[in-house]
View 1: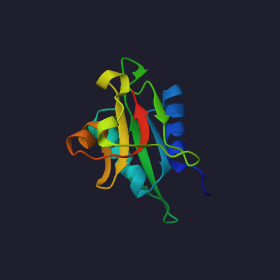
View 2: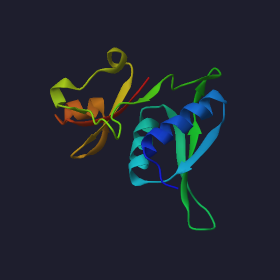
View 3: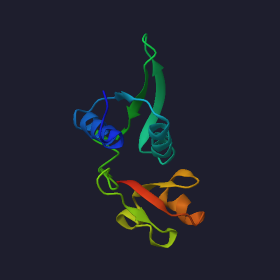
View 4: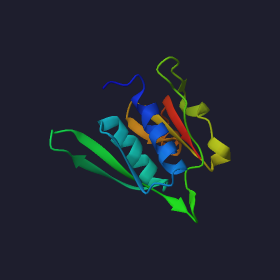
Amino acid sequence: MTFTDPIGDMFSRIRNGQMRALSSIEIPSSKFRKNILTILKNEGYIKDFFINKSEKNKVSLRISLKYYEGDPVIKEIKRISKPGRRVYSRATSIPRVMNGLGLAILSTPKGVMSDSDARKNNLGGEIICRVF
């Protein structure tokens, strides 16, 4: 099955899993999704993610969701750049999410990175999502 927006689908699965208070969810695997999940893990928004291989050589990612006192750690995860409307930003104009309390994930020429890393490296790029 092909998706029009696989990254948006991943964010929807994370939101739906947290609404149902699931401990983990499973999504199809890709290199770009792994990079985004690595950033979410390093910033403390998810516990961990694992690579699962099924019997038909299908590779999927199992994401362990994180909760604090029964509430999901991710209050909001929103796709900014969509397939129908790409959103790009220069290094000097990368938006701050909730005055620096949140996180923006960017796809830069040097790879996928958080907004703070992009500012440090003076890199702009496509704004994938914002997380708070």
